[in-house]
Length: 155
Image 1 (cartoon, rainbow, N blue to C red):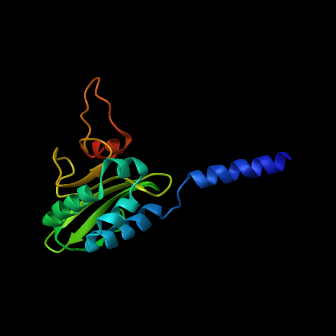
Image 2 (tube, rainbow, N blue to C red):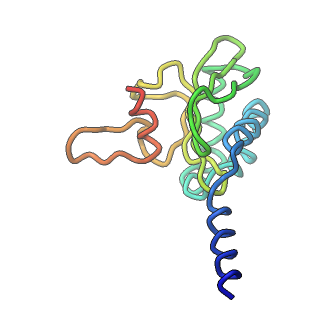
């Protein structure tokens, strides 16, 4: 019985952690959806908290703004830095090379995404996030969301 309980606990712990290539796999799905400008498919890639925050119509506008910045994207690089649930990618677009920050949850759904030429800029043209601003406000008494801590470490 103890062995069965231990096996169950190990199974639960293993299922809580995403696989070693999860963020890369999500980035490849995101690339296909992005270039197709498929707002409904993008909505399916989002975590429930972002699905509740962004309607299909909102995502259509976001994709339009993003394409204004990038036009078509040829490819995303492998992450230059990151871990199982987040990564910093190069974005090889039709008219420029940009940066992308992608963060996923334990279910391999997007909880933060930005494509930018300046990760430290306050306003981003191409961003989906669970917080009003993709960058931390910082300072005393101002909370920083976990997804924002990734960007703060670069500033």
